[in-house]
Image (cartoon, rainbow, N blue to C red):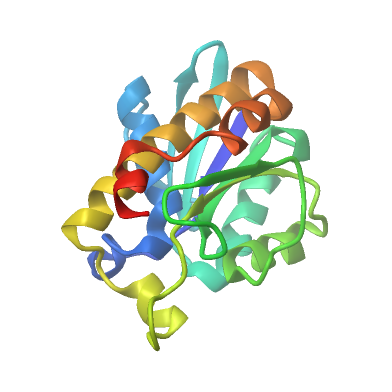
Length: 197
């Protein structure tokens, strides 16, 4: 089994905010592959199904971001998965909006959800997809930027990025992290990104 964890915050208040990018990618994967119904399990919203030849579980922790590791640790306790089976998808302010960065391991980079997962699993050796949401403009705080609803232009750019992140997750499952890194980390700006540059 492979475990794909998308990070975000629970509730409708945060649904359209950049900090929920990981949730969006999980939802997109579920749509693309008609995965099973979402249930509450492991302090998360949980689905199972198949993506290609792989038995896959999607996990959207409902603990709030800074406690995401509690959910992932509980899933590890009960599911037949190891670190090599884990893929975490989350937002990244240090990347331009819409850009992807895939890595086989690494630190938390100041992201509270990743910090929690690393602390609870006791290692940073698991794959991740970072989806760029950019830094706030002007004097706007990082918190306001991450937890405010996106406008229509941002929504279009991020929707395109979510589609590419779902494709990257599929490639990781089928061909491995390195193949996905080679394809998506060096990907040119999308049409929507070029318009705003």
